[in-house]
Image 1 (cartoon, helix red, strand yellow):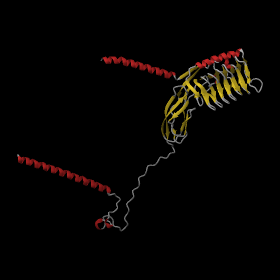
Image 2 (cartoon, one colour):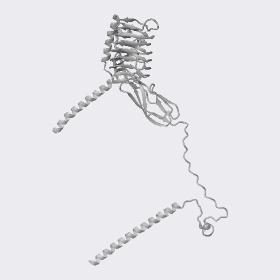
Image 3 (cartoon, helix red, strand yellow):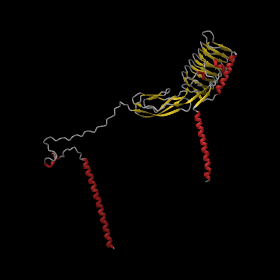
Image 4 (cartoon, one colour):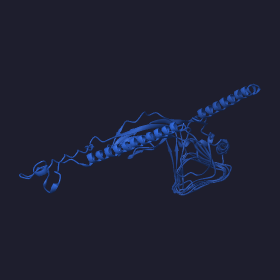
Length: 428
């Protein structure tokens, strides 16, 4: 009883701890469905600049800057003026109060971007990635030559990349922004210097602690802002984004939810199509396992299509993901019916018995002539197999012999018993 009294409160306590842990897990799962980033990063007066250097701005070739250009506290701006020099479709601020204020605002923006908590750390190579809105960090970030990076989101989506050291964008690379997202809300905070390679198509605002270099033919939809070093240009096109959201506008990502119903049946040998639909921000992509032979799913549109080849029922698991946990999964059954043109195989037809041969006229038959036999004493062919009745007769004969032996054994045993009885009576 004492043990029972001790265990009972202990069990209640353990149960309470388990419930609390379960509630904590449930709360964490619910919160992970949406991620809100308070952005974009406020650039202040630096937002109007396409190029802002600290020590100098140097250009070679017919660079075009759509936006303001400035330098502070340095004084050198070269390579802009009459053709074939560069052109500034904005205001040039050379060591004036506006440039000084833009530098202070750049420092504030740099510090804010650097202070954000990353959703993913340890990034190095960006080639081939498709990233949802959020904060990403690494040591030295790079995009390999001819590589590509996709940023998929909506109009208010924000991306902040934190490079502890350098940012290197290779030659011929491409950064693509989809889903209505904007270069307004892409920020690259760089701990040292940034380089944008030849012919690269770059998107976003570079906030570099030291210098920024754009090599021959690189295009930038964004801004190149250097805090302590120079900005170096060579035959570039730099377009400062306009019409950007007000700083502080929240950017929310929402985990996907599959909204489509059960698929319709398919028919073997007939083209088939079924669309998986899902909601979420940014737009999710799709994968599927267990599809019937001949069918595939389009990762972007969610359309399952093709020509199924084999009748049967397939259990298919569809997954929709957009970088915000949890992914959405749905298990459905796609039934492939046999083709209507398929001719069923007819069952085998039993062979028709062969009629007994008719004896020729004048030939003695069974029962005719001497002894009723056929010539040479052979049995007449009747079409019956004598094996079965002979087998039955043999079995009956064996059974009869067995019964006879048993009866004989019993009689012998009985006689022996009687003899012993009589001898016993005479002896007494």
